[in-house]
Amino acid sequence: MGAEFAVVGSRGQLGQEFLRVLGRRAVGLERRQLDVADAEACARVLGELGPRVVINCAAFNQVDWAETRHAAALAANAEGPGHLAALAAARGFRLVHFSTDYVFGGDGLTRPRTENDAPAPVNFYGYSKLLGEEAVLRTCPSALVLRVAHLYGGRSRSPGRASLVERFVERARAGEAIAVTRGQWLNPTSVRDIVAATLRLLPMGAHGLFHLTGEGACEADTFAREVCRRAGLRPKLRYVTHDERPARRAAHTVLANARWAALGLGPLPDWRTSLAGGDAAR
Image (cartoon, rainbow, N blue to C red; front, side, top):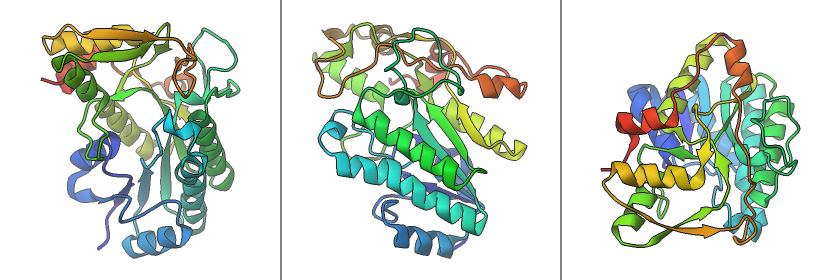
């Protein structure tokens, strides 16, 4: 039952896109097949598959829930990646792990962060993801850790976890208000662009920490309006402050892809370009 790639956390929009692109070269592992928090299960399942590359898309990414469900967030976002990294170091497979722009924000900076900037998360989700990326890099220096941001596009199969674009359009069609954080600057990034960039980095032997986001930062309300406009809708927006939600949102977590650029690679597409190219909901 071997496969070149094992995609862990394959039900989400990023995992689904990897499976779509890789086709028969990959096997998808949903949580019911592999819970990354279970070290013994990781060893057994990956031992049976024997993949050359493990792509970890598994995460507890309900940002507000993470504020009260610390154990669940740590298990998926910190302990699980550590288990995968230990196996990668011992068995020699390549590990790709995804982190987030939410490791930043607490320093008050309003310029794009590079990989050399010190993390400063403002919520427990960001803190748990920071612990995960640190565990991976400490345990398996040959791993590739990619910080991504505000993913859209693709189709999620996770229960109750429709993609960002789908959620915006569904609410707008239903006449429901879309909650956006006032003054939140971010990098909307297409999962198609993330998958293409990841598969470009792997043959180059890239390892360590990379930022990987689409070009063009914007405020959260700008993104929501553009998504709905392309679906022929005028959304109702409900503005909330950074402190009104259970988990605080940082005002500015825009990333700069400095290490990607240092490899001589051109920028990822602007978010508007990718949205227009097929990632908008219809």
